[in-house]
Image 1 (cartoon, rainbow, N blue to C red):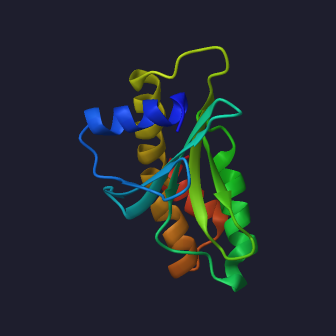
Image 2 (cartoon, rainbow, N blue to C red; image 1 turned 135 degrees about the vertical axis):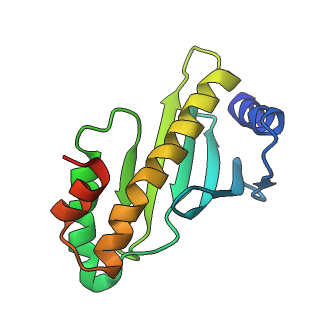
Length: 151
């Protein structure tokens, strides 16, 4: 499909991941079990833009009555994050963590992909319990972040 796609397939094969190519798309789908949750993940090649993206989707969506609280949680979580960010789809409540890199004029190596993928997974897993507490235990976004970050 292209050099970005080939590099990501090569990385996931070398790193012994089980994945499924998405038909007609330059993307791979996989499932990952973290310490705190099971995530559906996907890797995406944007060949024209020379970009690689990796997403971890939270197993729970924010219910409609908690979407604005979830948006505050995501905003508080994103403040200070250096690599990647949480995203909230306000239309359906999906929350995902995204890491990405633009490699225009450079080589996308397995080492670069590994850093983005594993940083993504550890951060998504770290922030999931706070999000789950917000949804299920009805704590405030500020309390949920304090629970995760301990400050």
